[in-house]
Image (spheres, rainbow, N blue to C red):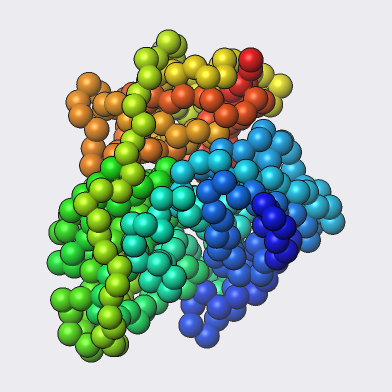
Length: 427
């Protein structure tokens, strides 16, 4: 890493690595920087970051900063790939509020397998307002990536039937434990699965949600004892309080069910309290105001679905992704309302789950099928689940950069199969 007056500069290789995801077993992975999860990049609001990625894989790759407000040529468009042996520099201006972002491969037809095999990492933007809030920081501000996996008898990752992915990984390790002090922690939770829905629960631990995909909420929300449904790509920003636990005690983060409707309880992460420490952090009553919603001038309707005649093809409004086709032209500075519908209610595979991710900017969830948003919809979002046969209304303002950007199902096996659209921001 190098630093200039206004910029942090990084170089990061994309390369294969044999890593210990399960105790005593080496697994071939595809990685950023040789680790699974990749290196965490900590940025600051208003301070630019430049990252040069060198591709040391035998196949093309690229990088999308999920949740980033970035120029089009640094967004990781699926067709803007880095050839083997080549490198590409990405510019991240960080002119957005502090938030928990992540970076991952987005090269078309390869993104699901690349992310499944390890090509993902955290990118955390510290907001200008966060130091005065005195939230848990430093070693007590912990990013946690949770995902599923399947292994063959030799320890290799199997990218096959998603229903057979029977191992939960946390920051790239199976059945991990996390020694904590009896105090408050800030936990930034990411569902880094390519397809799987999570339903997380911290048991009786005091838990307050302080943020969502796009950053801090106006005020903490007490979520103690509740489930946290989380679609692939969604993030949660939480303050979890271990101060009421005795040294030597344990607490378990669990997940309910591999897919919706499955009621099995899976252990995810064991917290072990091994010390007491003075806690100078706090949970403030006020965090970050949400901006007012300006009037929307355009309404659009999108339907996510599959063509299941033969090889499944993902569709948006009946069309598979075509890099030469612009599906929506949007004037910069306008505010729009999009109604996103899951059209896969009765297929030969049964109802099919989808989620929706918008590049370039966040949105606010207005309602679901005319009813109030769900608890997980609060705040500034860039990814939301869309269950079979339902619709969600979203409002977004497109006021940053010009160029072509994606929107798609973030169940990456679906986007790999073509469930993506392309918008062009114009003056």
